[in-house]
Amino acid sequence: MTALTAQRLSGHPPTDADAIAFVEHLVATPSVSGSEADAVRVYVHAGARIGMRCEIDRAGNGVARRGPEGAGVRIALLGHIDTVPGRIPVRTEGGVLHGRGSVDAKGPLAAMLVAAARADLPPGVALDVIAAVGEETHGSPGAVYVRDRMRPDACIIGEPSGWDGVTLGYKGRLVVHAQSVRPCAHSAGPDPSAGDDIHAWWARTLAAVERLNEGRAGAFERVQAKILRVHTSEDDAHERARIEAGFRIPVGLAPGDVLAIAERSARGEIEVTSSGGEHAVRSDRNDPVARALTHAVRGEGGRPRLKVKTGTADFNVVAPVWRCPIAAYGPGDSSLDHTPEERLDLDEYLRSIGVLRRAIEALARELRPPGR
Amino acid sequence: MDQQITGITTECPECAGEVPFDRPPLAGQVIPCPGCAAELEVVGLNPIRVDLAPEVEEDWGE
Image 1 (cartoon, rainbow over the protein chains, first blue to last red):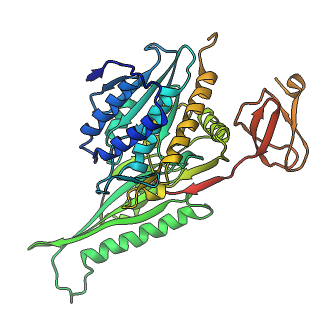
Image 2 (cartoon, chains in turn blue, cyan):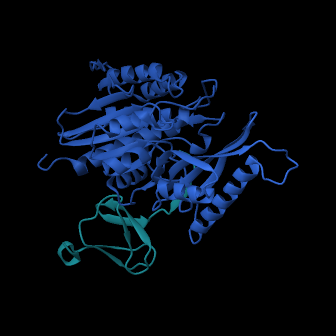
Image 3 (cartoon, each protein chain N blue to C red):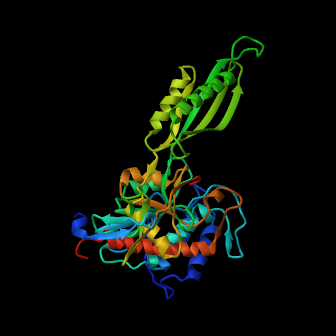
């Protein structure tokens, strides 16, 4: 574990110019999943410069802390520093920062760090701002590491919701791998091919999913099934057909429920395995973190928008274990995630810092230990 | 603590009916109007003000 000593510079607390320079530096430092170390160093050095106690944990996450070690109340701000691949020339034009990760999710992460440094905290309240690694990979190793080692009293997940948006929940996810194997045969013969078998399995699976979706309105409430990859191969003896399918799962269903559908549809003829397996999560709109964020949006002059998302995030990883007030927030348009058009409006970024600061301060007041 | 104890009420912006609070309201709190069932959000505490709460939208992405 690498620890940095807090060294407050004359610029503390960070100015808007500092905040913009920080997010530009972070976005300009590549950090595709599995290669985040350089960006994590940028993060912890920036945190130390603005007065945070910073370290790199054993999972490779960057962690910046404020407040007493033994604080009675801890608020976690959990962002991620890794990105999907894709080089987008990093540049700021007309107040817009272009670059991979500017939206998903270095913008939200940088906003959380700056807001945490600026917030006025009552005694007995501590903040942990975490730049997790590996969020874009199966298993989310950075979030799993912190999930198993801390129990915050409240959590803000750093993901793009737009500066006036608050995300209450995410769907769950399961990836199913199905394979059909048959002895090689002439295509003019009477038997179906491995490809026919796997196609029939998928048709049965889709029909079962549609039956399950009857009476469910809206994408957040329905199981969504989509083929991610199709592959066929053959050798001297066998032909193989494989499908990798992604399922997005609503609240109230478990990944195991969806796997059971895929297995029943296999009828013993198709090999079915799975990976991933996140449960859907959704906070109540009266959740203290959701309340703090929506009220903070109004405080910054906006009209809050509440969202539930059909994707997944580290929200799905930590919420079922921490069972604390939780919501996701961050600047940026999530429809630009993973696209070559990824970009962040810097005015929106600065407004989001104001929202986060207000929300952190409101949460700290509400959750602070009695008598403080 | 019930309404009689708090004595805190406000007016629904949708139906103009009385909206009671059975405990001191919190900023950002969402409550249903007992008259018209509109979802109301507490947008101010001093004085207490409520506005129509935003609907929850569906969005995609992480």
